[in-house]
Every structure is written in structure tokens, then in C-alpha cells.
Image (cartoon, rainbow, N blue to C red):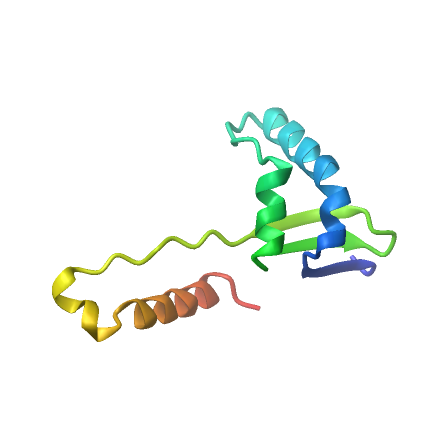
Length: 102
């Protein structure tokens, strides 16, 4: 789609969130998905934390949305001093690049 822009979501996208969540809920219902409702407040937090991407048309109509959900890395006590979470998170990033190549 030529007029599609995928970009980091910004605070001003908050006005699109009710439309977005209503559309997602209707779509999930239509396809028989039991998707949990995404509340606008939850999505606003993702935007504030710079963990959200939105796709919009040139007329600022939303067409897609995604966000990161990062879980904490568990490390056994004996290895905490070795900074294990950093290489684990780096490897997760590499894995994501293979699953979702540009």
C-alpha cells in the first residue's frame, strides 16, 4: 500500500486508540478469537514507554498496531554477578530478527 506509514507510535496517536481497540475487538469476535480486550490505558502506557508501532494512512487512519511486551529475564542466584540478562536479551533480539526479517 503506497500511502501506508508504519512508525513509532506517539502521544498524539492516543486519539486513535478507542477506534483501534473497538476495531480489534470486533475483528477478534468475527474470527472467533478469544483475544483479551486491549484497554486504551494499556496502549497509552506502551506508547509512553516507546514500545509501540502504529501503521496509518496519509489521512491518519489507523490500519495496524503492534507493541513490545518484555518479560524480565530469570537468572539463578549463583550467576547473577555475571550479568547474564544482557546476553540473553541480545540473543532474543537476534532471534526476533530471524523470525521477523526486514
